[in-house]
Image (cartoon, rainbow, N blue to C red):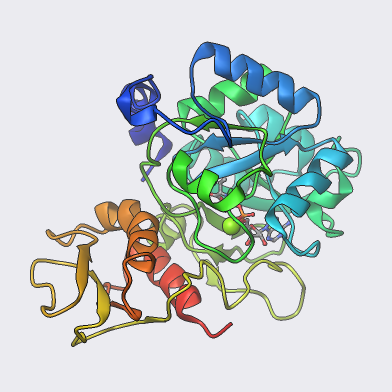
Length: 343
Ligand code: TXA
Ligand code: MG
C-alpha cells in the first residue's frame, strides 16, 4: 500500500472526524473531534509539553514534542513503557526527516515511494538533531515516520516540530484503533484525544532498519516485505542478534487479558472465535470474522478492535483461525503471535 492510496482516502478519513452522534463522549478523558479548533488546542498543549493522542492511518499515537525531555519522559510514564524501548519520531515529510537522521539512497527511494504512509525508517541519528535523548533510548539511531493521516499531518504542520509518538496504549497491551480505545487504555494520562474515526490500516507501521549495509525488516506492517524487496532488493527479516537495534520487539506484546491460541481448527463452546474467511468454525460462544471474504487489508483494519471485543465477551479464551502468511498477513500473524505469547 503506498502513500498515494491514502491521499485518495483523505477526504473520507477527515469526514470521520466531523462531530456527530458517534462522538458523544464522557467528559473525562477528553475526546474531541479533530476540528480546526481542537487541532489548535492540541498544538498549544504540545508546545506546553503535554500529551495529545492523535489518529494516524495505522493506530492512534500518544504524541509529545520530541525535543522536550520532560514531555518525552511523560510519554514513558503514561504508557509504563520500559526506558530501553525507543520511540518513533513523526515528521511532516522528507525535509523534517533529513534534519534528524542521515538518509541514504535506500531511504530516499523508500520515502519517494511510501511517504507519507505506514513506513518507519531506522537511520543513524544526526548528532546535532534537536531531539530528546530519551527518544532513542540511548541508541545512536532514530526511527522516523511521516504519517499520511490528515489529522496527524495537520497537527505536525501546526506544531512545526517533530512529534514522538508510540502507540497510545499501555506498554505491552493491544494498540488503539479508535479514540475510545485510547480513553480505555490511558485514562487520565493524556491531556486531549483527537478523534479522527477508526484507523484505516489498523496495524502499526512497517519498521525497516537502514543503519547497516543490509536492510532489515524489524516489524512487518502495511508496507509489505514484497513491496520493500521490490524497492531495495534483498531485505533481511527480524532483529539483528549482534546489536541492540530492535529493543521493542519483545515476545509478549499486544496482549489481551484472556488467553489466546492460534491456528485453531476447532473451537470450544466457552471460547470466543477470531475467524477469517468464508468458512468460519462453528460452535463458539461469540464470533468476530476479520474478513468474511478473506481480504487481508480488511482483516488488519479489524484486528485490534475485534481482539478487544472478544477479550471482553465473557469467553474463557480466544481462538484465532489461521491467517495466510503473505502480504499484510505477515503483520497480522506477527501481532497475533506476540498477543498469544506467554507473559
Ligand atoms: O504505526 C506506528 O508505527 C505507530 C504510530 C503511532 O506511528 N507507532 C508505534 O510506536 O507503533 P511504538 O512505540 O508502539 O512502536 C515503535 C517500534 C518499537 O518496536 C520500537 O522498539 C521500534 O519501533 N523503534 C523505535 N526506535 C527505534 C530505533 N532507534 N531502533 C530500532 N527500533 C526502534
Ligand atoms: Mg506499540
